[in-house]
Structures are given as structure tokens and as C-alpha cells.
Length: 171
Image (spheres, rainbow, N blue to C red):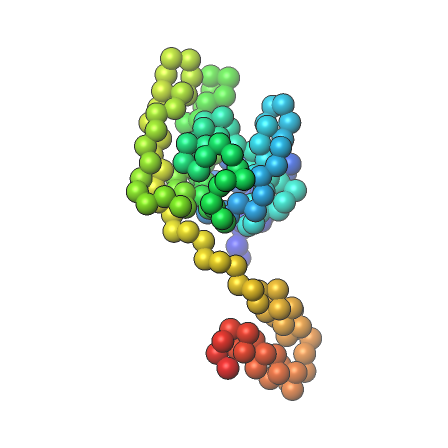
């Protein structure tokens, strides 16, 4: 049994505790304006839209350094790998936070020193992540066929198999 859904924090955003099981790679679906405390909300394809990633200033500086300050100019289907860094401090205490380890649309590692606290900088290194393949134009149809499979009789299952094979170019 996969515990990933059971351990999700109850919140309106992706939290460091959601990554306690290990790093996860996400595709950016949308970038929206947040509020005064968290000005950016990044909607992720692989996470509920009601729980966007609201990056810290450190992560925002890193994203803008690599992909640019204007999100409309970011590459198509940008991806990053997020992980829980237990050493992230808030109000002087190590409470853990979200950091970026890999990003798509870069050819070599990116190194940048960013402020961690007053007068203290820390080196951040981001590794290249393969760019996302283009979305499968037949994904929605394949999903509908998969859903229908559970209630289909044996004859319809044969038809579903043939339709799915044709959509995958295996006919």
C-alpha cells in the first residue's frame, strides 16, 4: 500500500512535511499571484490545484535566476524536484522547509549564493533535470477507456484493448 496520500499535511499548500517520504519531481501547471505573505502560488500538475507550492524567497530567487523573473517567459512545461531540507530556519529555529535540487531546461549544474539570514549566504546547487516530454494527446481518451474497463463485459474489453492499442500507435 502506498502511503503518499495518507501522509499529506492538511493545509492550503504543499508543505515540507509532504516531502518527508523523499524528493518529488513536479511539472509547473500554472503560476498565480498569492497574498502579501506568500506572493507566488505555483500550481503543480502532480499535486491538487487547491494546494499549490508557495515558494520561499530563497526558492523564488533561485527560480528567477534560472528561468527568469517573468513567469510568462519560463520554458514550456518547466519541472523541478523539491525536497525537504530539515535545516531550513524560521524565526531562528530549524523547522524544515522546501528546497529545489533539480530543474529542467538547464544543461549543466547552476550554482548561486543566496542570503539565508542577515549577513549570511549559502551556496545552492541545482542539477539538470530532463525536460518533460510533450503531453500525450490521447491521455484523456486512454483514461476514459481505463475507467470503462472495470465495468466492461469480455467483448467490450477486447474492443477497449484494440482502441487503446490504436491510440498508442500499436495497432
